[in-house]
Length: 102
Image 1 (tube, rainbow, N blue to C red):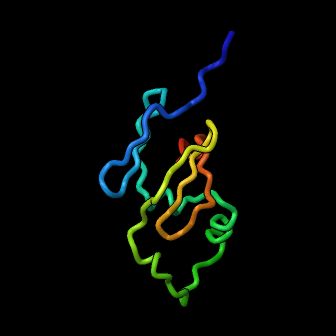
Image 2 (spheres, rainbow, N blue to C red; image 1 turned 90 degrees about the vertical axis):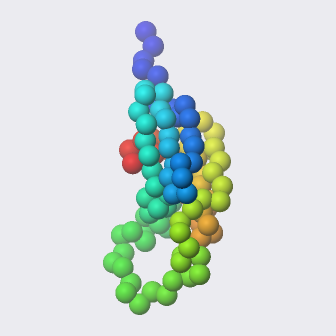
């Protein structure tokens, strides 16, 4: 007897300038803002940054002054997506499980 089918996207599309929509094979439709995805980057350096207290004297880089947007999004095998951001960040691998949990 086969188990339940793993959750996988059936469609991904950009909606407006600031959202990603993922439709899942179980009928769920998830809407993510690019800012939310960038803030939730799963890479080690971003996770460490989120655990530190904010630096009130931090100087923003020019790329951080632009609205957050992806410059590329590519599949990683059948289990994740890699998003390259307009601030130059590109080390986050968003697994399907992680995207669904967001």
